[in-house]
Image (cartoon, rainbow, N blue to C red):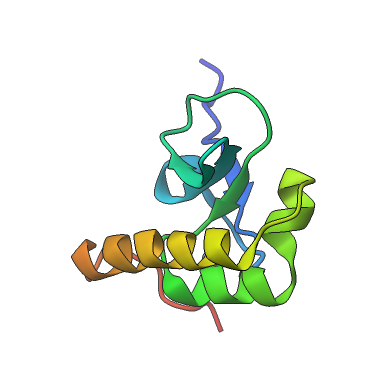
Length: 100
Ligand SMILES: [Zn+2]
């Protein structure tokens, strides 16, 4: 039987690859940036559900680049808030330690 490869995506913040399911996907909607449940078609940017990675991505302008659209300050603030909530509610062991 062929081995099943777990699809991996790269976080736009820390630039490390992780199984797709452990990342969140950011897409642009008419309401601004949303955290997508990986079903919406179109462009998406993957991030670890950690504020740290969102900040890194913001610094590098990686979300705007990945989505190929400008991201406003308000959009980014909203996204940070959403990720912050996931980060706080997340399983403390569920995240990945920084691979150093
Ligand atoms: Zn990351």
